[in-house]
Length: 418
Image (cartoon, rainbow, N blue to C red):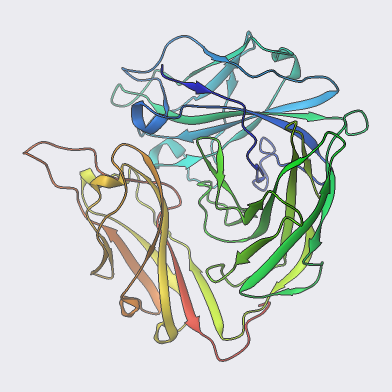
């Protein structure tokens, strides 16, 4: 299979979706380890094809040495791309366990299999399905029923999170030392932390924020602890540091104006791979004099948004005055964007193309012509991918929640809590 199994220690914060108890997140004071499998290269950008005509058969052996001493619970996180629309029933079997079905994102319209998506479902698993030490394995499947007889999900990573009783397990501790709760934060925020461990050196401190922002997580939830994964590595969190005082500078220039408080927490990881989740610093107010940032959330998202099948469009609303706009970005995730053929806003072509073919890609691109926006309803369209040598090619898949628009405005009034 050309797989690369390895023990990794990225920062992980799993965001809970309101009202959906199959998703979870580390809480303040939690102590846990992460065991992560992923493919570093090869087919489909380093993914596992689950189902389909060319999917894998058999099980995936894990080389990790699982520590289950004083374990209290376990979870599995799946880096999942829908891939072929109409695919349902993704499930995982761990060693000899029963099949554990992976839930869909509640914020994607039902049936979720009609909408291209890449998100990170998290599911509780029985502790007794794992073995202490080595010799663990897993296998995955999807429902064989499919509207065009090729069911397929792509999986870029499988993460096993093991929680422990902190009273019985030596673990790192610490806290965020700056900023303090209830402070005002501006366009540039310096974060620091205190951290130590009885196990030895602190390997890394990772900062994450709870706020309303772009939904790279792909679940359609805009206010959450923001992060996302690719091949087991965290992306789009606030930042990471490896040496005390673990200083990170957070540039909030593209963080939308906030109606609720901002919170910041840290994951402290020691040299043994043990992770400790700090208490959150809360009641933070985003204050940026002269700057306002609007997140324009897309709606009327098309089903089966693949550009080879024709032009597709969404809508988004601009509530502020576009005449005050000074800069804008388009933000989305896709698969195989090497086949994209332009993005249009209200009929104006604002972007051409970027990214690889047959791989996942996260986009954050500049809109040079801010004059394309209008107050009220706007229409964003992707161009149709043409045939190449008279043959149909793949096209770009646009993942849920669609293409998000960020607009920066000149603001004569100091910005703050709305």
